[in-house]
Image (cartoon, rainbow, N blue to C red; front, side, top):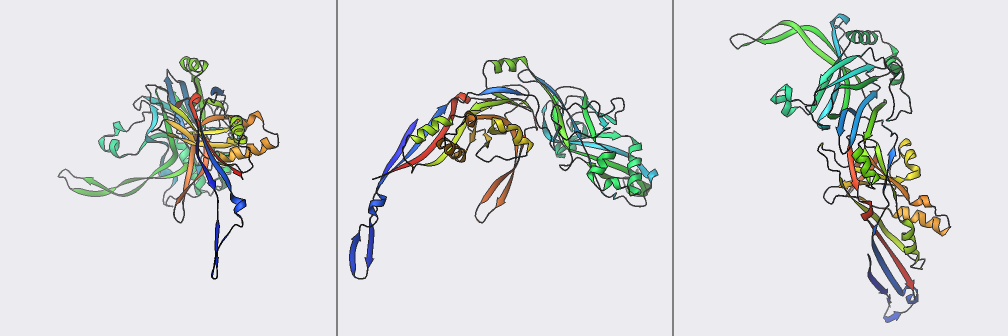
Length: 471
């Protein structure tokens, strides 16, 4: 729907008053007489959305997915992960502690409460392995860890649920994380303790430590029905020393005696400075495949289906050029796409953000860690109140292509984009009178499985420009 807001006839008369003379000057009046028309187009467009399968995605992330899930509307998802570990440069354990005082070492996997998909009470078991060789630098979601570890020698096995309900009411109410602790071989604790005490140079740099300890591989060994988002992986070494220990006597009094005191220290952790990657095996269900074949514009995460669209830029350029004046100015271009979650019983929601990027540039965008520039790429946050994604500030994209059109260089690929679920990291900077939000990172969405249905045949495009004619 096109609306002409107003036509403004501007005739400016300059009043000059100098000394005792009161005269009206007509200098410049012939230069400013004319009309300015502001056109606002609201266009319902069919973006020709087509779901396309992605063989793999960049799955390097600080968060790690673990578990298995089967949803009739979605399919089956199996997630494991590999991770290098950052070591402490110094062992902050008192010199009085000797190797015989070292008791054990554990790897802790921390899951923020509620940060899961499926049933938190589903019984599960994991196996943790020590990697035997370096991880590839070009790792992606379809990475196969076979050959990188010895399946006959697990470093730790742990049965668990993603719930603190078994720890009692206090932990269930107050603990913000679910801690899955995996006991590792005591020999590893003693070995790493001895190396610290000897001042081994492997702890000086992450690269040298990775040569000795390439990292870990964690897989789901048993269970189905839950995928957890592991936000932190840390390894603690435990030791004991003799000290004063309090205890309660039979008459209810508190007394003290000499006894062993337990203590611990975090010595290894998965950090952004070292490599972590999710191994994702996603198989869409027959029901989802049928919907895709029927033309439903559905995107999924982690990985799976992205959406190919065609933005109708050519028709907007033609509309703009019809104004027939060199004084036309584009003031706004934006697009809204209705969207909602695909109905399911497992709590799969829509993707929190979508990236709209030129189809030819998608791989390079993630490989080079780019951020949306409003020319070749854009992002939109899901608006739950209006059930849509709104891509704003597309004006620079229009102006760039317009220059190519004037040179006769517009290509069909200028209209070809893909929509991909992403996670967006922002930073707020306080100015003198306002706060400016900057996007610092955009990565494939790996926090949880999601399934989004977009009504690409009902997209709303808002195009505003002004044109002026001179009399």
